[in-house]
Image 1 (cartoon, rainbow, N blue to C red):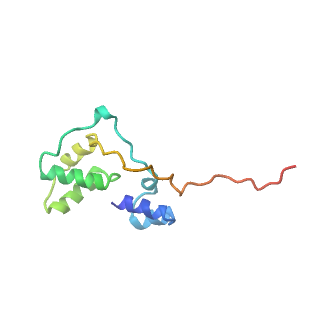
Image 2 (cartoon, helix red, strand yellow; image 1 turned 120 degrees about the vertical axis):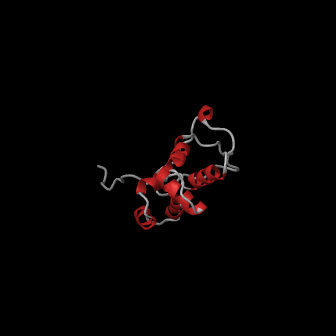
Image 3 (cartoon, rainbow, N blue to C red; image 1 turned 60 degrees about the vertical axis):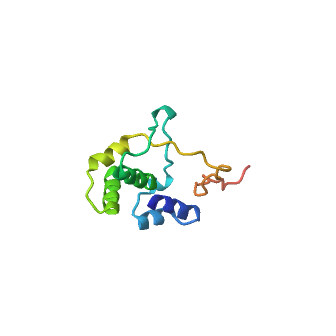
Length: 123
C-alpha cells in the first residue's frame, strides 16, 4: 500500500527522493517493477484458512515488503501473534495468477530522465 501510493505520487510529479523519505521506503522500491512468475510455477487453489488468507491479502497489498513486515502487519490485523515461518512460506511460494487488465496498457512512466542533451554548437 505504501509503495503503491508512493508510485502514484511520483507519477503526479512529486520528487521520488522526497516521497521515499516521507513514506520511509527505499527509492528503489518506487522504481521496481514486480515480475511475473512463469505460468507453470504458479500456485493454484485458495488459501487454507483465515490466517493464510490474511497473509495473502497483506502480501498482495504490500508486494515490496519482506516476510517479517508482512507477518507484523498480519499480526496487527488479526490481533494475535503469527509465526514468521508461515509468512516466509508464502513469500517463497509463487503468486496466484492475476486476471489480465481490462483496457489498453498504461503509458510509460513519466519520471524517467531524458538523458544528456547537446549544448554545444556544430561546426
